[in-house]
Structures are given as C-alpha cells and as structure tokens.
Length: 213
Image 1 (cartoon, one colour):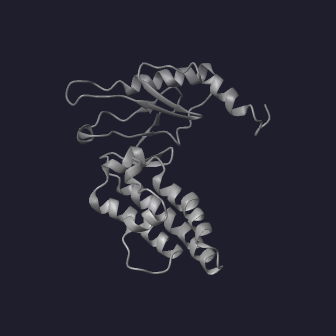
Image 2 (cartoon, rainbow, N blue to C red):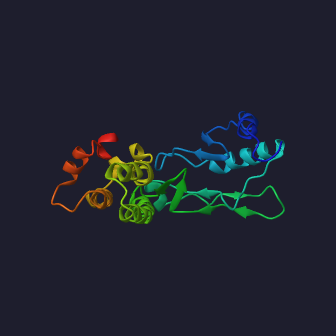
Image 3 (cartoon, rainbow, N blue to C red):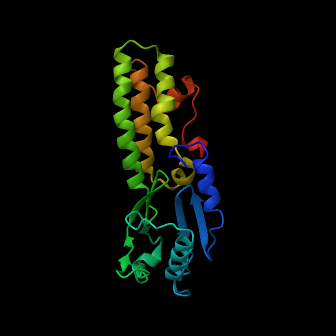
C-alpha cells in the first residue's frame, strides 16, 4: 500500500487488532504500552515473559520491535527495589531495554515518582515560544478578539492538553506556573491593568484549566 494512502492507518489497526497478551495493553496506532500492576513485596514481575510473547507475536506477523524507542519505567515505591532489567534474547545479540525515570507518552511527560514538574517545564517552554508570536500579532494591530482566538487555539491548547490526567496532581507552585503563563498571554491581548486572572477569564468568557479537569 502506498505511503500516505488514506486506508493506511485503518489497515495497520486491523493488523494489530489480534495483539493480546496476559497483561494490560494500551494501543494507539503504532504505540503499544504494556502495563503490569505489582503489589510491593507480594508479586514477582512477569514483564520479561510478556516481552517475549510480544516478540513472538511480532515475528509471526513479520514485524519488528523498535528497541531504540522501547523504554521501561517503574512507577511508585517499587522503583527503590526494581526487578531485573528487561532484555530481548531472541537474536544472537542480547538487547537490553533502557530503564528511564521520565518518558513522554502520547504528548504527556510522565515521571517515575508521578511528579509533574517535567511536564510543566515542557509545556511552559512550548507555550512561551508560541507567546512570542502573540506579541508579533499584537504589534501588527490585530484586534483583541482575533488575538484571543489565537491564544485559545495555539497557546491554551498546549496548556490544557490531557489536563484531566495530570492537573489534579500539581503542587501549588506548579499550578501557579501554569496560571502565570496564561496571565502573561492575556495581558498581551488586553492593555496593562491591575486585574486578577479570574477577572480576565471572566471578561474573556473563559474557564480556568482547573475548572475543566
């Protein structure tokens, strides 16, 4: 099938539809995540077995696992006494799976201790770079309602992407960082004034990110 063909994604989904292991699997197009729940001190990890089953499935379906993009991350207290590293010994040369403490999964930066600082840093940097274009549009005499539309679609969308997953776990300082980014953007759109973020949202008929989670 030619690359870029409209039926390509559908065909791929059909090819991986029968992928089923003895653990929880999350599939999103060509991203596959294997999840195992371990109760501290009472279970032995079987992830190595699940990896071998996955390798057998890919071989039978004439596919290959991209080990350069395959990562292992342990969440919670078990990270203090982790199991043996995962490896693939199906070939002549054994390949070890890299164990990481931070990982970007479908646009969300996840940390092994479930602290969202890495994600806040990433979206803050991305939103700040986009705020630069908001300033340029402001200098070009664009009307406030056009600037507000740019903010909602280009900047706000970065800050609230999947916020229902991570926003409730923010510390007060992390939440303030998110609010500060929004405050700076809205004060580019409107003349400088001593007004609270809540009042700015009310005047713009916007809800806060926290209200949407």
